[in-house]
Length: 430
Image (tube, rainbow, N blue to C red; front, side, top):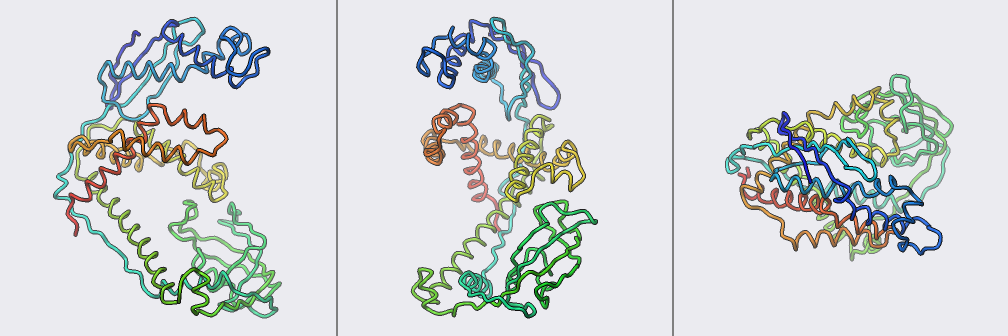
């Protein structure tokens, strides 16, 4: 299989690879078999149609397109191994020539692992701050649990601090409606903290049928970044007010929640909340540790392809977060008045930081012989496959998880965990 290697700036190389029809013939046969399992071909059971019949049904180009991913994966891997390239990230593929019965020619631009001079890990000092759970926090949790079993009675009077309200709400920012800010029958529990500070206080004292307009500031850590820390106008109309009577806090209440008495319930809640605080402290510790390592280590030029890969991951993470909150990407871009490419460019600084963190993890693993055993990889793969075993397309997922690049991704995740454990053991804790 002929190929050429061209060095590019910023620790990158471009492979131009040619694959002959003879070399990809077996991949075409396998592709035709897969197609025959999905497509009804007259006179043949699924998966049993010969190559020529499949070709008549979907065309030679259809078979080649089905086989393309496998052809690229095999040929690219062969060239990388032959050249002993220390690559990182996913290659950028550009097809130059693709026609049935002819040489397939493509370029693969890939980043090489930049040299990293690690800071002295033993001299890194990180403080681990663990917040101690107070009795007040436990009491607030218990009140929330009691609230779930509260008895509610509708009333005509003004809303008090322990009441529940049902309102219609419209939120605007600079007189423009906020996406997701128009709610009918929105329930507000006045005894519980609202995600927008001061919101509940504005509602106390209102009666059914009354309306009110007011301005409040979104929290600085709000998930919609374009609203974080910004002032918004609220228009509310009260539909109903309910008096809420909470169950008495006694052993009977605790027993309904699976505990013998109130004391045991409080102990369990305190343990659970402390475990949450410990986890948050551990996450903050890891972030500070990596930040210091990035700041004190030295890096060769970071390849653009590696930064772009991190940007793409961040972009997908943002889309998933938005979808969880019922917001489309188009709506989000409209709200922040930016185009997709502008948003993508905003990721630059964080993407470079994430790329450096990945390089540090890899270098620490290399320097300290931190490896992933085959047994560890198989155990992790088994866990992932178990999650999908009842899915209708399990066979397809199973095949996906057995691909070399997927196994490599999972192995990298395991290695990163082991590296972080190593770092936490070897830095100075203050």
